[in-house]
Length: 139
Image 1 (cartoon, one colour):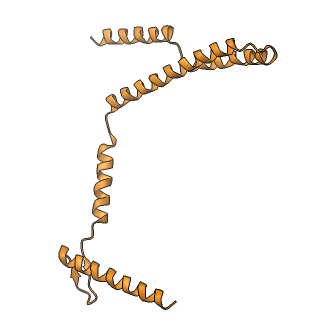
Image 2: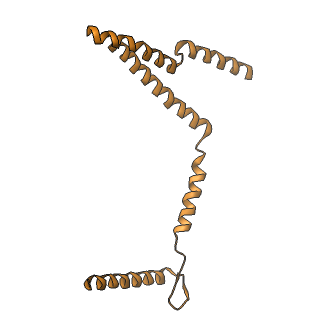
């Protein structure tokens, strides 16, 4: 079975080269062919040859885009979504880091219940706002 898979893979690889060839090489070749017709068109005004080559280039660019899109899907299927656990850990860490677990009162004691922390935050910002308003009035 393994031998047959390798043989099929070699055959498909050879077929791909003969039927499609290297898209990058074909693009480079057509770009090279485009130089001379552009120079001739500057003298004669005949632009059909340029249009034909540009149409071929456009088709090759589309084939290249499809190739890379398919390749990315293949890579994703074989490698999987390896970043899932990494990003999950980062999000969990950020959630733990951004969670307020307690606030210290003016007398030095620690407040850890949600309702007490809400009251402390409301008092802090009310006092802060009052100071800001008083500071604006003195200017």
